Length: 334
Image (cartoon, rainbow, N blue to C red):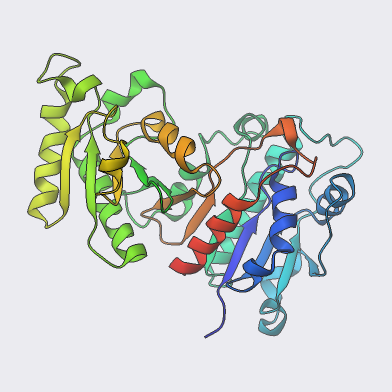
């Protein structure tokens, strides 16, 4: 069986994306489980390899305009770069927020989605983007998750999952202010997140998972003492509905104790109500190995679990472990 082709987007060229991609392109362990098709800017990769003192792998480089007509033999090669030539290197600065980098990152993502939807690749893995740069370019998305949901949601059910062998969290809400969370939560949204989590973990791990659900408020509301009874009104009914569908799920549990090692050892994933409720423990326990993936899409999408890291960009210091994990999960799902 041929290895799956994974579209790997460069992300923001000024961040660590080019650096970790160069490392992945030279990694024999990555070549053993997938074929990389990098959507980015070839001159940026060359410049990054020189500045960061990283090897520039042997690969095919083709203009983006030719990708759709590429024959299957060349497409099936071991390493391919689809060159969008979007960056003006005369004005480009590593480690800085720039409009041209936001526009480039957007173009790479859209082209990778097109390639996956046409069947030319089997999954998409994304390097990090900078939201400020994206907005400067006129693309007002809170992040990758919402961009992929707009283009490739299989239905109106989708959510973010942070996955690792150590800890896995999914999120009923993601990129929004804390004051918005109670208004965004509904019984259906919590239930959708529980169901998507159960489906994904069953696919990845091969067994019906055991899930825990966090409450929204301190001490999971303390029987209505904190908050506006979101636990009783929104979360408990969703848990009951999930159980009625045969999902093994418990909660709502207080977020300050649900991530204790003993509890994590007995569950496959924790369903969280908002971004930092799950991102903080995931990054504390599995920063280098966690994978960000979007559930509920018509395509497979995984991502690194870190940002653009402008402070260390193009210095040869970025750890590519998260990207390797993201590629491995994409290949496994594909």
